[in-house]
Amino acid sequence: MKIFWIYIMTTKVAIHQIKAALDFPHKILDFINYAKTIQESMAGSSYFTTLSTQIAALLTAITTLDSRESGSKAVPPTFTIAQRDAAWVIVQSLLRDMQGAVQLLAKADMPNAESIIKAAGMHVKGIGIRGKSEFRVEFGGQTGSVKLSAPGIPGTHGAHEWGWSADGTIWTSITSTVDASTIAEGFTLGQVLDFRHRTITNDGPSAWDHVDDYAIQ
Image 1 (cartoon, rainbow, N blue to C red):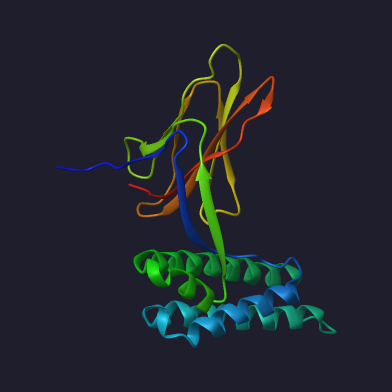
Image 2 (image 1 turned 90 degrees about the horizontal axis):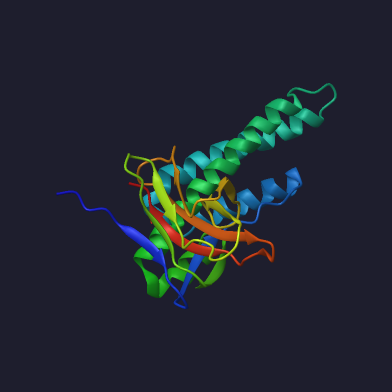
């Protein structure tokens, strides 16, 4: 028998938790130093011995990015800006993967969660979630899909806006709907994601309701 989990954001129920958060600098040299700080912090901490392979891969990627940034500024250049930017994207992706790994370690050891996150060189994001309506996230019927649903908008016309995030910071919009439910597809089995919902009416947008740490089925 297969069990499907349903996550619900219920009326006036507050959920408090902490999350590992990243704050990427916009300037390339600042970003490189930021990435180095995280890599060095994790390499030097006993919390992350199970992540040694990922930490080594991050170091390799940072070294490549650093080299390409220097090469793109050389006269004549030894790397193009496009090559530098490609390496930049790789480091960003690896850092987000590392953020997810740190979050799982922190979640598994809640008494030390804040210390674990800080030891990774990441900052702690406190979350107090309070919803004005019931927002549900559940299995969408096929692997990698989710069904999002919320109460309808009574007595008025409006729209529902939906979104998802891998880190609680950068949000990707899901197509808005008039209906109070939608199916989102294309996720990876086992991903742990945050989802959000709000309504848009003639009075303007409502506050976002959140469901955090939903594991994709």
